[in-house]
Picture 1: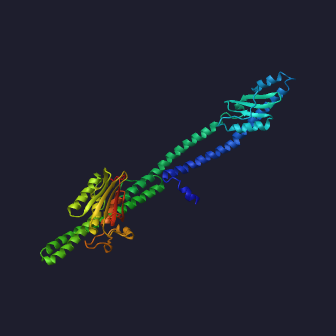
Picture 2: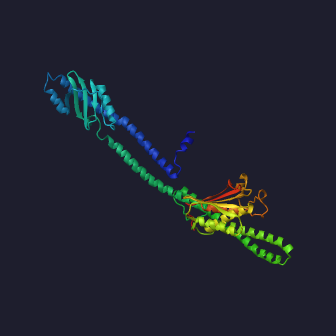
Picture 3: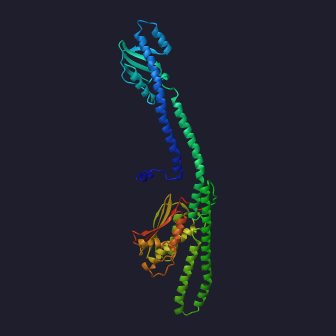
Length: 440
């Protein structure tokens, strides 16, 4: 449970986690060393120096007590010990110190422990200590140099630790960044290939990263060969079938009307299936990316359907701007979605939404729609769901939604299917990422 809670606050990027692994041990080591140094070294040194000054103050107090017997002894002692004494009418009972002076606690504690009559220890004055003592003759103040009770250069060790710790951490970060760069290049090449790009990539970095990069290149080459073989196969079969279809058309045209019309419908279905196979074989990457006015682009597609007599209208236009996309592939995807809508419904409505992050083209219809448990299956190639939909308008091939989904993925987006709340039929959202700029 603790690790699950802690995981929410950990960095998600490889850079952040590697930096955390690097910085945390360094900081913990400095804290442990600093704590040990303060408690074992500075505290001990301060105690020893304070004890030595305590004995000197006791010697001064003894000289004050014997001043009547040996009056010349006190000035000599004060001069040798470099101390000053004075009497004050005010009784000080509160210790003073600078906020960052941590050794002041030790000094005050040791003076009160070994010197009788200490009422206050003033350490706020820079470079000076005022020791207040309660004496029979009055309130005595003993002044001496601060450097006699604590080390004067104690901060230098901390400065060196922080400076060199930060310097070495920065050097280690530069080295770590250089080691992580090949991993980022591999991740970028893998992500681009997942979107249909084949960006230049050469393995680099450590042995393990090179091995992963070489495995990625082999995998990419095998997948590209497989895609090329599939495209050639479908294109070849579809192209070769056009010749006998043409002969069928010529032979059927010589028949009587009663026998000719059913055969012509069959030939048209076969022609439509071949066109769908060719579109699927070409895929989503047959053209280059361009800057396109998305609103005008979608409006042109809708107008083509309207001129054909289909009931397709623009419902909502939200946003405007130029979008980088592959016009031929995106047009085919939108046409497939609208074609499905007018095929299985009476009317269709198209909405366009443009934001800084994505372009969304929504197609809604008033048809029977697709049940939630069949929506994943509907996106697969050659999947046909006609038994649950309107069969009066012919038989589909099962590639329209699959092609649209491929186009969406090629543009860093997704094709989402749902139920239209306004029309009651199917709602298809073709979402294309704007931050993605596919290469030619």
